[in-house]
Length: 113
Image: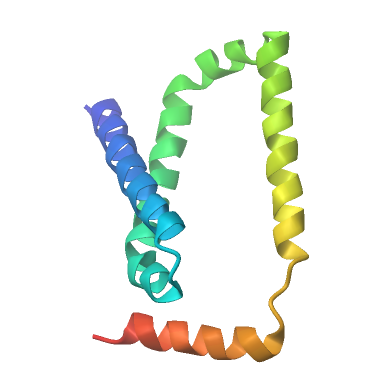
């Protein structure tokens, strides 16, 4: 029963993350991104919990996949891409004169009822 709940929550959270992420990607308005942020953030947390459950149920199978050299190489490339993009993003800092007012406006918009 718990396995089915994990699978369903992973599926629904994936749909929520994918659709909210794609909308924010194509509707390039900071106001819309802020509007969608609570949905994206909440289902991101649900997805993390679901993935942890999924990994615990399927850990043996996943480790057997990585024994294939091509799969392991693909995983390594994906990890390097992730780390590289994090490095680029972290070093692409928004100037404080823009970031501080933007953060304040975003906080005000998210708390606006």
